Image (tube, rainbow, N blue to C red; front, side, top):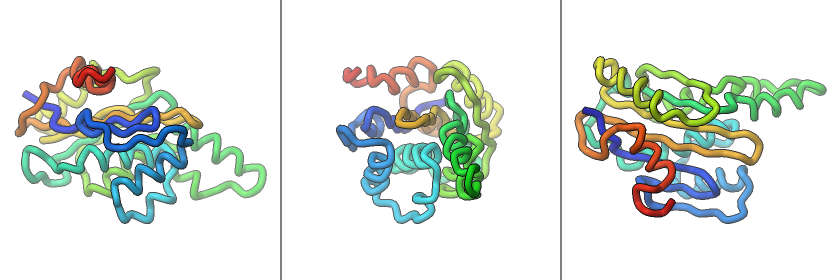
Length: 206
């Protein structure tokens, strides 16, 4: 049996860790909100400033997700899988990179023109070396996420999995990450429970 042992949802200028509101920035644009979120978590990670918005959003969601550590105890980096998805791939950065090509194409932007780079940034930060995958859907598919991540855990190809949704296009953004573990307790890892956490129906604040 797999369990959701932590969650972090970022959208509408808010961050919620395990259902609890920890940051709200009314009226903030994406860049200002991401900076405020970075400062809120108090991380000293200079590379953050070089990331594209998609990687910053995913990186911040992972910071919130893993703030309490792993409930199931210590893991080797190879024990932890990462399975993410979104609707717009790296299109936000693709547009930014394309706009530089009329002058001098920006290599700093080019390195972020793949959506799975966000997994790389999370993995570097938390020393993760397990299996990873990034999928593109029109909207978050909790059933697919449950089945794919669950298969990795059921077949013992991972002992824990970070899974969920990270999407950015211009000023529109949303992220919802879930930490799933076998050797811990919490809400069952189901599509309904992921949807409830994303919609905040689990604590009556939908």
